[in-house]
Every structure is written in structure tokens, then in C-alpha cells.
Image (cartoon, rainbow, N blue to C red; front, side, top):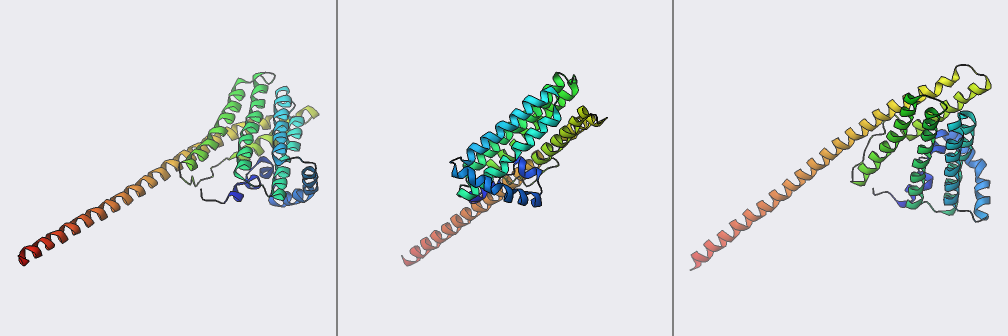
Length: 264
């Protein structure tokens, strides 16, 4: 709403790669990856292609490794492809292509990646993990994550600021889940008891997502009421002004009539 196009481009989109790296690490990896981004540009590779390949890698890592219970290697693969978020943004900045399309593509593919991650967890617990409750929790995390994102996008589309972040946003959901999954995968390397980190993380994400959803719905409801009240007050003020003008006009016409009668 009212922002310049450049600020809504790929470089400004809060993606998974940016979420997993603090500002100092991000600055370091940006310097490291800039030559690679430049190399891809010279080879005619577009930022959109990098975005698509990065998402494909995340989806493959989640839906191939996680359903087999290979949480460590699945997380390694996902993390490697996460860096595409930094590469495509770097390429977009070098090319000066920050745009609405870039932001749209990133946001849309982020939803695909989210679904793959939690879908992979659900498939594991529905199969080899043999835990229907955790399968349901994983599906809830998948669905609630989509709805949480939708509430903000829908609120903004009807002209509301949706001025609330919420307890657990996309960055927190994915960082908590992926870190827990990677560590839980160390159980296969002989680390005892660590496999319980993932179930705990999924419950945390589920509860946090529910709280965030409620926070955003309440915020949209409040902002909507405030906007309608402001519109009503503006309409009342406008009506009063019209009525005042009508009365004044009527009084003026009456005075003119009286003057005309006196002249006669």
C-alpha cells in the first residue's frame, strides 16, 4: 500500500534464507555469494530460475528424506537450497529487477516450500513414525501456516495495515522445525533421546501458530471496526456540511425574496 515498487522486490521479501541468518551472517554470505550470483548472470540465468530451482530442492529434500525418517540429511539438503534465497536476491539487485513479480513469486513458492516441509513430517508420522497424533499436529502446522499468511495478505488487500506480527511467524515456524529436525536426525548417529526434539518442536509451532492466527484475526477485526467508524464519522461530517449549506442557501433565498417584495 503506497510503497515504491523497488521496496517490494525479491530482495525485500522475508524468505527462509534471510530468516535463518542474522544480519551479520547474512552480510558475510552476501559477500561470499556475490561472485556466484555474478557468474550466473553472465551465463544468462535469471533470478526466477534460481528461485524455482531453490524451491524444487527444498521440496525434494523434504518429501524424499523426511518420509523415510532421514531428518538429518533432509535438513542438510534443505539448508543448502535455502541459500538460493540469498543468491536470487543478490542477482535481482545486480540486475535492478526488484519488482512486484519477484515478491509475488517468492511469496508463492515460500508457501510451496512450507507445505513440503510439514507434509514430509506428516508422511513420516503416518508411516514409519507410526504416530497419528503427531501426523495430525504436522498437518495442523501446515494448514495454520497457510492461513496465518493468508490473514495478513487478505487484510492488507482490503486496505488494512494488519499492524501485528504475531507470536510465531513463518521464520520462527521454519527455523524451529528445521533445527529440531536436523538435531533429531542425529539419533541415527547414536545420540540418545534427541529424537524427541522434533515432536516437541511441532507442538510448539502448532500452539504458536494458533496464537498468531488469533492475534491477526483480532487485529483485523479491530482495524476494520476503526476504519468503518472513521468512514461513518467522515460521512456524517459530509452530510452535516451539505445540510448546513442547504439551510444557508434557503435563508439567502428567503432574504432575497423579502428584499424583492420590499422593492415592489
